[in-house]
Structure formats: structure tokens, C-alpha cells
Length: 300
Length: 300
Image (cartoon, rainbow over all chains, first blue to last red; front, side, top):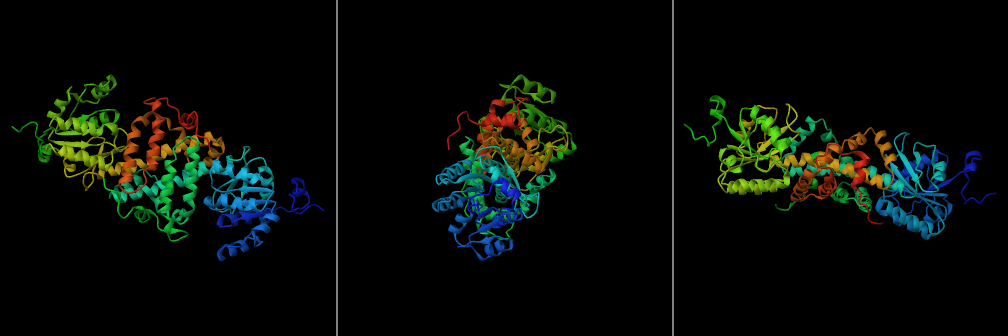
């Protein structure tokens, strides 16, 4: 009988009904949906409830994730650990797992810079574990065609075999650790960077009392920017997580010798939105823009 | 007989065929087209050839602008001076005109911050002249419907009366000096800011060797970003003028208490494109992106 804690081979997975155990740290909206997708693909998916909220517990239950209660249980039982957490927590999660002596495959699927990922990989591999770089593009994968998990690094194909089959599309990049994260950074640099820019532009226009003619210009050009700005309430609710992501993107730009200022500014804009954390009724458009202006702007 | 150097009244302009003399400083592609539009609207349009290129001379001739050779001639004859020049030269042009004792209407139509405009207004008004704030949105107005000149300040309606009637649409904002420039800043903050961001993102993707999957993601989302990046050669040719504009936008953000980093970064990106100054064959897309990367990027 094979050691249940060793990774089943691709052959066994395809032919014998052997099951991979995937540990998800820590399932929020995205992680829980990714876990559900992995379960649908045939994996046993586990998570750790210690210190997590009742809402997280309910969602994980509903998604068919098995609670192993303690991190040590997840480390001992997982063939693959998927780290899906806010970017600022990514290294802490990797460190906790390393400290417990994890020695199988660790996937960091967070929005962090290639440099952060390479640093985590070095730390994870100290214990003999394998590191796979991941980057998620799209929202929580509740139906097929919405979301891709990009993977890079030597063990990426093994992870893809284990996870493919649910609504989450799994894409292997034939590239080293760092590539999946770089792709995520470059993609989000536009989507989230321009959301922050748009909010700041409306704030400038409000401050200078030229919002109406600006909106008229946007309408005239059929830019869709007014509508996009109105929809920024959704961004405001998630902005608390995006501050760290923007900092990681800025660091990615700077490591390439490109200016980090776009996303340092975006981080600052999102930081001013953290009052709307998880607020489904967060405003967009000029109402949101007004909240970005300091009470006492500097003088000319 | 009225003093030919005094401004005709609106009444005289409408009824007696009196002609306003508009001095354009210094007609490049935009200024020459704006001058042609003013001429079409019935004004006598003059310019100063001293120190200007043969190409500028040809264009001004073709546009029906009268060469008065020296700045002093333009200052003495103009009822309205229109300053249309690269943003970094705007204050110098205003200063030169002030030094010569100009005392009629001065319109700064450049892409400069409200604070820069207010500083110029104070300087211009020292000699008893009137300052009108202008902001041009759109390309050189060769046909109707492409370009608006926004004006603000007390004398904006007088300028509008004199200039309206050509392909350039003249829009008066019922707002003080600063508003027209603020509108221009807010508008260009998006159009040019996102061009710089897009170029930098492609450069990051090239550096990290993830350009192909990034383009695949952009295609999948029908974002149009690949096509927009390919067209950035046109931006590269004009980038030498946009460095100063981005600095003015950054200053406008900071004066409102908003982060200036988006456009400081954009200024740096455009600064790296100045090798393509006025180059009609400047590349876009990944070829342009590659030129933005330093030969020796910093290490992680």
C-alpha cells in the first residue's frame, strides 16, 4: 500500500482513482471557489478553521472543503498546498508552513512580485519541498470560462494534472518560477492601476470644480469612463486587499528598471478607500472621488 | 477713427466687419491649425518667424498666418495673443510678452496646471493686460467636430466671440482662470497617462518574458490593449512634448492632495521615448516597449 502522504503519480491519478489532497490556505471568496473547483476535479480539499470567521466557515462547508482544524494537520495531509491570501500575508503563510516541515508541493497563487515569489521559493525549498508559482486572473471561478490559474516552475504540470477539471482553467507556462506572478502583475497593473487612476482623476475634477465638463468630454468620446467610474464602488470594497498588490506591482516595475510611481500612487488611492472594506454599498463615481480628497489640500 | 490697437467691441465685430488681430505664439502643428481656424472665423492672424524652422514657416504661410517677424510687432498689433507651445515653455512665452508691455488679452492655451496658470495670470496682469485660461482637447482642428478650446476667466466670452466660426469649437466655462487648464489636466491624465502605463506594462512583460500570455489575456478579454499598444508609435513621436505635460498633471494632483506618482512615472516613460522625437516611423508595441528597459536593470 502506498504511503498516503506521498504524492500519487500522474498515472495513478488518471487510472486508479487515487485522490490528491489539496490544502487551501486561507480560503476567502477566491480560495474557497478555487477549492470547490479542485474538489469538482476530483481532489480532496482541506482547510484550517483555526482563527477564521464564521462566514469563512460557512462558505468552506458549502464548497465541500474538509476542515482539518489545525495548520499542522493540513501540512501533514496535503500533497499540494495552495496559498491564496492577501498579498501582504503571502510570505507569512509560506513561513508558517516551512516551519512545520512541509515537504511536498507548495503553490503560491497570490498577487506578488516575481522577486517576492523567488524569495518564497528559496525558503520553501530549504525543507525539501517543491515550489510552484501561480497567478490567478479573473474572479472566483464559480463557472467555466471566467478564471485562469497560471502556473510556472518545474512542478507546474503535476499541479495542473491534479487541479484541472473544475470551472477553474489551469494554464501551465513553460517558464520558471516568477513567470506566473509576473503575468499576474502585468495584467493587474492595467486593470487595477487604471481603476485607481480613474478614481483619482474624478477626485481632481471635483477639487477643481470641472467634473461636469470632464464628464461631457468623456461622453462625447464614448469612452465609457463615466460608467466605469460609477462602478468603482466594487473596487472600493476590495481596495484593502489591493494596497499590497499595488506595492508588489510597483516593486515588479522597479526590479525591471521601470518607474514604480504608477502603482505607488494606486496603492495610496486604494489605501484611502479602506474605509469601505467589504462594504457592498460602497459608492462609486463622484461620491467615492470626494472621499479621496484630504480635508486640507496643500496650497499652490 | 478708432485706435486700431484697441480691441473692437463685440458689437463692432458682429456688425461692422471690424477685424480682431490674433497673435499666435508659437505655431507648431496645433498652433498653426488653431490660427487657420481663427482666420476662417474672420480674424487677422499673425505670427513671429524669428528663430523658427523652415517647416514652421511653410505651414504658417499655408494656413494664412501673417508673419510680423519680431515679437515686438506681434505684441503691438495683437488684440488677443494665443500662447500655444510645449508646456515647459509656457511661462517663458508669457514673460517675454509681459516684458514688452503687452496690455490686451492674453490666452494661455497650454497643457499646464491650474497653479502655473494662476502664476502666469498674476504676472500678465501686472502690466494691465487681461488673462484668459485656455485648454485644448483634441488634435489640430483641421475639420469641425474634432477639437475644443475651453476658456475660463472673466474675458473668456470676448475671446470666444473673436475665435468662434472656424473648425475649432470654442467653449466658455463659467468659471475662473484655472478651470480650463484643470479640465485639460484631468482629461489628459487619462489619455496620456494610460498610454505611458500601457507602454510600461508591455516593457515589464518583455523583461519578464511573459508578453505572449499577457497578449493572450488581453485578446481573450477583447480589451483592445494589444492594438492600442501597437499604435503607441504616434505617442512616441510626441513624447518629448508630453514630459512637461505629465509633470504639470502630477503637480495638479499634488496641489489637490492627490498622489502625483502616476504622472511622474508617465513623465519618466515619455522621457525615455524622446529618441523618437517627431519620428513618423517610431515603433509601437513590444519594439517600443523594449526601448524603455534600461540596459542594466536593477537586481532583485
